[in-house]
Each structure stands twice: as C-alpha cells, then as structure tokens.
Length: 465
Ligand code: ARG
Image (cartoon, rainbow, N blue to C red; front, side, top):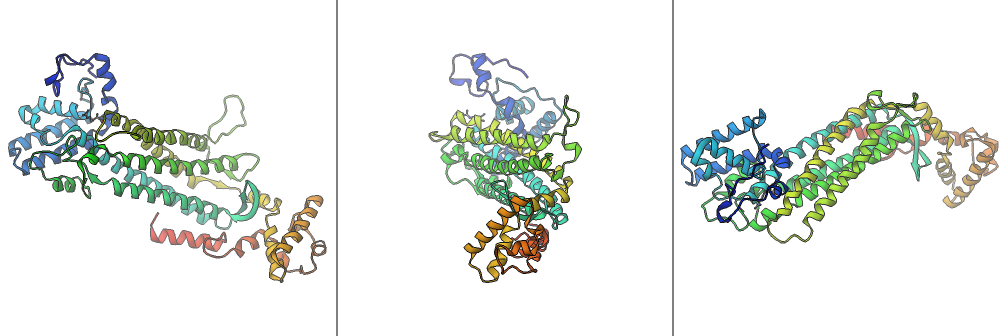
C-alpha cells in the first residue's frame, strides 16, 4: 500500500495550491475498506464505457482499450498485484488512475458523464444484490435442513412452554417448523429489499444529472437493474436499501438468537433435550467434563453487532441534507460486517441443525412432569357439558392434589380423578396421555404429528422457502 500523497491531487488537484495533509489523506481515504467493491466497480465502468461509445462519446478504439484495460486490472487485483494508493482515496479513483497508467489518454475519458457519487451508489447496490442472493441461498439450505429434521421429529413429544413454564405437550417437529416460519419471513424481507434496491443511479452524476447524451435505460438494463432511478438527487443520496437490509438482517439475527437460546437451554444437563454434535462445541481448559455450546452462544452474541450496525446506519443518515455527503462513505463498514456476520451465522446454523439429536425420553419425561395435559382434562370436561370456567377450577384442584401426592394427572386412578368431578369416566385416559394430547390438535397449524408431516410436505412441494 503506498501512502505517499501527491503534491497536488492527480484527479481533482486543479483548484488547490497544496497537497492534502498526510493524516487527512489517510483519514478521508476509504480504499482499505471499499477495495472489496472492485468487481462491481469494474463491471459498472465497463457498461458505462459501452454506453459512452453507443452515444458517440467514445470511439470504438477507446472503448476497446478501456475494456481490455479494466480486464487487466481485474486480473491484477485477483492475483494480488494491485498497489492500492491512499492518495487516490477510494476504489473508484484507484482503478481509474491505474487504467490511465495502462492505456493512456482513453482512460481519462471513462469518467465522462458520471461522478463517484452515482458510481459508488451503483457499486454498493450491485454488490449487495449479489450478497442478498447468496444469503437467501443459505437461508434456503438452513430451511431445508429444518424441514428434514421436522419430518424426522414429527412424533417426538416435548413440553411446549409459555413463560418458560411447562404449558402443553407439543411435537419437536412442530417446534422446528415454527423456526422455519420465522426464517421464511426473513427470506421474504430480503427479497423485498432487493426489489426496492434494484434501480440504477448511473446518470445522476454528482447530483443534478449530466449534459452528455447518455442512455440511462441502456446502463440500467445492462447491469440487471429494473429501471434507472427517477430523481438524480435521490439517486446519489439514498441509502435506504442499506438500512432496510440491515434491519432485515437484525431481525434475522434476532430469530437466530432465539433459536440459539433454546439450543443452549436444551443442551444443558438440566434440560437434557438434545445432543449437539461435538464438532460444534468446545471443551473447557479447566473443567474436563464440559461440552460448551459455543456455536449457538456466539451466534447469539453476534446479534449485538448486527443490531449495532443498523443503529449506525440510521444515525449516519439522520438529518443528512441532499444530496451526497462524505458521511456516506461510512456506510460500508457496517454493511460489509453485517453481510459477513450473517453469512457466517447462517452457515454455522445450516451445517449444525440437521445434526441435532433429540432425546425423546427426557423430552417426554419433562412433558409428563409439568401437568401439561391439564388443558386436555378441562377440554374433556367441557365436552361432557361443563362450562369451561368450572372445568378450569376442577382441574386446578386435581393439579393441587397431584402436587401434594407427587402424581401426574395420567398417574391418578379413575377414583382419584372422580373426587373432583363424577362426570369423569374411564375414557379420560385417552386424552391424558401425551400422544392423545398432541394428536387431538389436528388442524391447520396445530401440533399433531399428522399436521407436522403435512406442513413439511407442502413446503417441500412448493419449494417456496
Ligand atoms: N469513497 C466515496 C464513498 O464511498 C466515494 C464517493 C466520493 N465522492 C465525493 N465527491 N467525495 O462514498
């Protein structure tokens, strides 16, 4: 990396009488961060150059020199042969200066009819669009794993919780399908963000448009955008898409953190509901017995940094007057780190989830311990004609008896149950078992194994996740 700042800046030094202070050059440069945009910057420049040729601004020779020059620069970058310069501030000016070095005069014409303001706004959109596609594919891989595991665990019974207190029995497959639903919404939000983002700022130039006979439809189409952005001031200043993306990312991380929390709890000796594969856990340097669920813990922790990036971007844009401001250069670090964090966390989850082993005995035992079929008993009494409030009271008394005697409802004899209501008959035991309880909730969205299998089948058939 060369840090020498030229006496007067080669690209914009004309009106200045001295070079930039060395510290200021370093302080204002973004090349260390935005070099990551090189492929998208080059792609944008190639299409811009083709458009300039089509509009009669560049000759065919100039266009060809620019295209092969840019190809050569891309190869240099990919082979680690590019000497990035702090004095040249950012990715855009580094590439342009290198192009002129390579091909001479034609290189100086590339910037006709554009500005770094519409250039950077285009680059980030192109880059983020690709990243959203990769992230969406990773969500799909995770969702596919969840569907397969849910299918396998459709009959496994565990306690369902509210307030983290045993509430009613549910199937593990049903629980996993709740995670699946959260992630489907995340994928939809990202696709929504991608649609709104997919407009092309090129042609907005610095802020007001340009006097050259440019063809904005051409550049937009060639770069895969749906249309050119409608207003030049908005085109260069808009970073809504970055905020929308980070907000969808924060929500996705929030969902992952909730899953992590459950995995950590379930893997503990106290719950003992699941076994995480050893390769996703670590040991302790002092306590030989430990197997720590590091991956879910770390993903849970990383939610904090993504939430932080969302706040950073919202604050970055707050009160910014139109149009482009240098503040916007600060959009990249939060955005880049959000993408990297999201991809790592999704990858960890997609690799880990299909390998979670359930422990049906402890899950079932826990469900039995917490009077989880109390609502089923109340519903049974209601079916005999008793008003629900009275049934609630009767079952409450039966639970109090169970607490005193250490018996679950299904452990009580018929005579014991009849102390609380003589409408209780021998068929009560059909509803008091865990299996009876879950399979009775056999309607769309219910926890019955049959419904879990149906939900999995429908999702797999539609491929829409
Ligand atoms: N490096 C700048 C950024 O990332 C590029 C645009 C700079 N434009 C300008 N007029 N200073 O936002």
